[in-house]
Image (cartoon, helix red, strand yellow):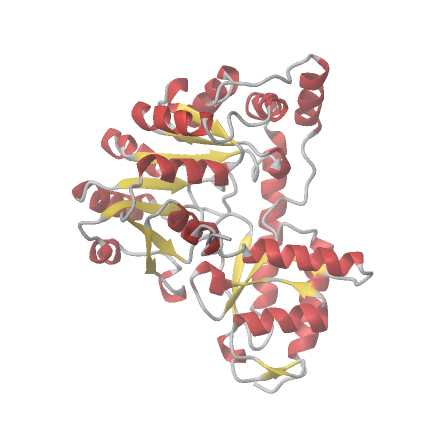
Amino acid sequence: MKSVSKIAEAVKASSTLAIDSLAKQMKADGLDVIGFGTGEPDFKTPDNISIAGISAICEGKTKYTSAAGIVPLRKAIAAQLKRDCGLDYDYTQIVVASGAKHCLFAALSAIVNPGDEIIIAAPYWLSYYEMVKMVGATPVTVFAGEDQSFKISPAQLEAAITDKTKCFMLNNPSNPTGMVYTKAELLEIAEVCVRHDLYILADEIYYKLIYGSTEFVSIAGLSEGIKERTLLINGVSKSYAMTGWRIGYCAANKQIARIMSNFLSHSTGGPSTISQWAAVEALNGPQEGIEHMRRAFEERRNYIVSRINSIAGVSCIEPDGAFYVMMNIEKLLGKTVGGRIIENDDDFATVLLQKSLVAVVPCSGFGIKNFVRWSYAASMEDIKLGLDRLEALLSEIEL
């Protein structure tokens, strides 16, 4: 039998989905596992949105749509971008797909040629790296550690650029770090991209989940020139608790929007018609539910950060947005925890799951070592219990 695709075979499985799958299997086997691995709100989809989806079914809105999505949804997206970020897009510049992840893949497919280099700010969402390889390009990572608040500098970006560089990928607010770039920081980074004629692939899916005095600024809103080269990725999954509805979108210049639409027309076609009509209600309907979730996430963030920093052997810095916190485990390296010598973050995550029934994600898959990611998209009760178990596990070792 002939060999399979070398590109597809080289793609690694998602570690976040693997952890979540294992935790769910252990739960199904009767174990009291608490999961902090998955990146989705623990709230249910607001009723008005669910009812809109049900109504779409009852009204027969179940046929194919255009590859770029239904016009009412694209217009609603354009209106929200104007309302929230001051961005002016015509609906023809909006392309809807089956989730923000799908939009990212379609966007890369629209701009990348084999051999191009794509710069990714690390720590990064793990799918970025694999997607870049899947479209035949080369991922180039630029790393920023905890001492930089996990945010790269313009000088670092500049140093990574070669004559093969096509695009810079930025997740803001960030998964896995939760950090948010300031307007001044974005301006400096964007100026580098403009100077070197790079596309900017900006994943802003968490932009509504911002805490404290932090202000979110869309990189596409810095200038018309920057907006023209930006492929802005967003969706309804995180802000509206609609992860399973699978609706994401890209806002881009008309040429790129057309190419993406053509690409989607020969791959998946338009996303679920029912989900699209539900998303129209999400964007045009009452928005109070977002603030309710945001306040709950902020309360949880405050608790989990304070609690982690009170436990000997681990620490974290306070995230600005999203619903993740990066726990530093460097002080545990070489120590025996739960009967196992901890050599890296994978070891620690394994011990925490096996001994304490707490599922977190090792950050080696995000391009950074010796950290694990906690998602606080979980109930306060589960967060407190999970941290109790962490503290009990670490109380057994000498630091």
